[in-house]
Image (tube, rainbow over all chains, first blue to last red; front, side):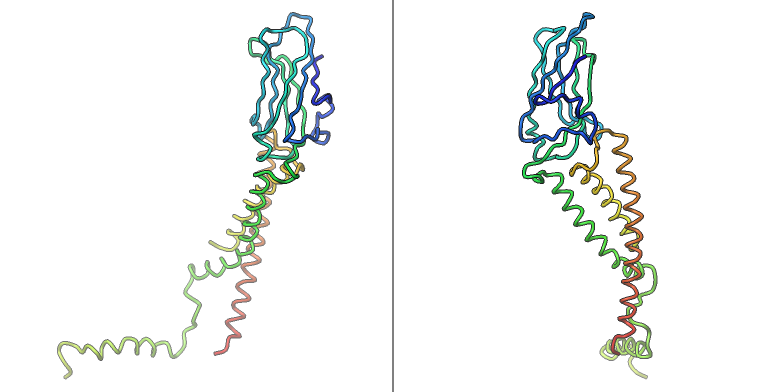
Length: 186
Length: 75
């Protein structure tokens, strides 16, 4: 039965998210794939994959020059490309691949990655900024009630008064006085 | 656009963002596609409903305050 160790710890002890291995994403991890087969099966590739939304966001392969039926394969993985982007709990899969490309053995385990200083990763910071902006937008949504009313109905700003026709008449009169009709006054 | 629909839009975005943020602080696991999509859908629906309710309530509050301000404004 193959088994894999992560910095000396058997990954089968981290088979659920609640028992995930706590790792520092800035430090390299040393994995050792141990296996032994007696049925003529050979292995030439040890693979480590990290999944996010069902997609492998990181893949590390250690390919052997010649296929082996037993033996340890050391694999070193440094997630430098993601330590400033992501943090949180992730599922990883350790696999042993045969020369024909088929997966002969695989095991899932979970790691909890901590960002530098605990929070300095791009995605959580961006998410916090989006949350603050949307909460601000949510509490401003009351103003849209007034906008919707103005666009749907008549303008409620100034209720009609008795002075309004007078104002309109006086506004229309000056041009009439300044430019009399061409026919003159009769 | 009404206050309720604007609040619902903000709530949907908030619901999705909160789910992803919970994963980043290790409260959720989004490594597998199916539960991740379910978490996002639930977050969007719950956020949208709550946002619509909050927007509707804020809209009523805004209108009542401004109607009161118009009624009590000096002539």
